[in-house]
Amino acid sequence: MAISLPLVAWDTAYVLLRPHTMPGGSLHWPLWTPYALYGTIDGVYGFKAWHARDGFTAAQGLLNLVESVLYIAYLWLAMRPGARRSTSPSGRENALALLMGFSAAVMTLSKTVLYWAREYYADFDNIGHNDAFTLFFLWIIPNGAWLVGSTYMIFSLGGDILDRLTLSLEVGKSE
Picture 1 (tube, one colour):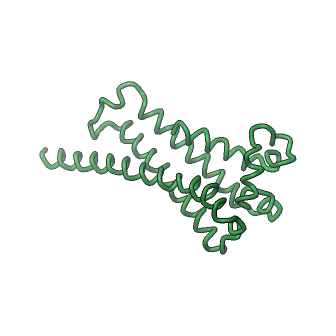
Picture 2 (cartoon, rainbow, N blue to C red):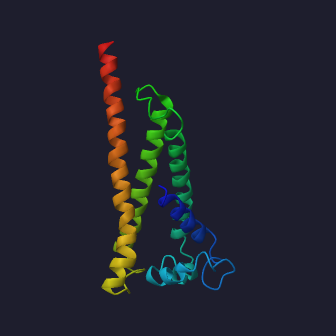
Picture 3 (cartoon, rainbow, N blue to C red):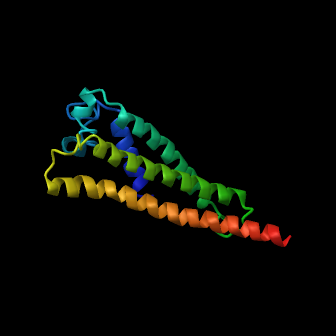
């Protein structure tokens, strides 16, 4: 999350502040200059979608804000003093942290799958112009990282949630 939260904040700001963050915009240099290249690789981020008034990218940016708030709340609850020592299933704040982290990871995975599916069902309209090398290294790998990372978090946090629920049920049966 030390990498993903700042990266998502940077990306979300680029998207929600367009056209000012795009090439030629007053905010483009120096912070968003890499998007000049990326906007030519992925039309969703470039002038293609902007001129078509395609709202998908901005809508995804709004969901990025919700997702980021959930991740920040998860970190705040999970990293507070004593949070790790309290493994009781009745630890409401610990359970809330797990639920928030899990929910945010499901959002990340769902949005990323939607992003990929959008390309597939639109006959790769925004990325199909790229050569295989560019597509693989500048679109598939960077976007695939979100699939891998969020899937890992879902299994990890989901396992913790299941453990707590199982323990809670076992405690309830013994009483």
